Length: 294
Image (cartoon, rainbow, N blue to C red; front, side, top):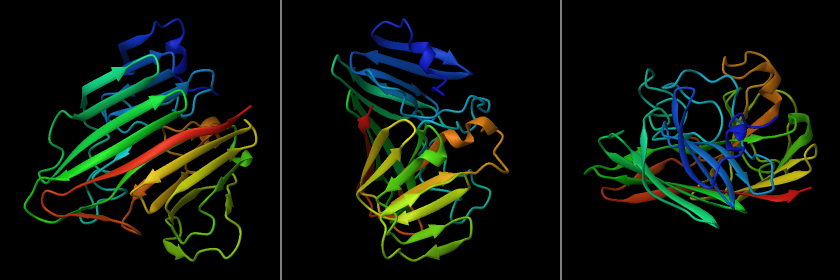
């Protein structure tokens, strides 16, 4: 399976090409280094494909109407991850992924891409976000910056919620989190760190775990003979998620459920919520590299 936006790049000239796709304003960027598609809704990357490689990201072929959450690519969860800590009716994962963002600066050269985006409107009266995206033929890097513009101490949680395209869940393993303490959202329990193996092998079942983890994660796919590295900074939470093949959300077709795994760089309430003093800034970053491709 390929990313559904991949075909839009066929015969496309190098440069920047704004299109309307499924009611979304999408910017297609193509250069010698590769391809990237980003939508103004949520500043969400929908497609990334370095030169001479296959797509890295999964995107559902059955999306909800524009204005609702987009299933796939790399959504931003900000300024809270999951449910709001005190307002049960607040939108899940915060407003950042639903609002319109604008491109403040963009350099798309033969060798690399650098882009800076900010929301069209204030998403918070106390916090101000900014997104920086860098890409080239070897990597994709995302930095989510936050500044406390209030006179109070403000707490937040957040995630860079990447959906990786895989050959099949039965073919993958994840190195780097297996010996970490975790919070299992499905059972609502904290689970102690494992005493031995550093590999977590996923099977085709529901998975929703947050690992108390820093550093890099490796996603190994024996089906495609690839290894994807996610390197995080300023994150002590790594989230691994797939809904399983029962009770699927409406925007995940049954024949696509086993074709992705979410591995997320995050700051969560479970392990590392962020607290910002007045005027203080922080950033969360995720850097993706494909280490093997045969």
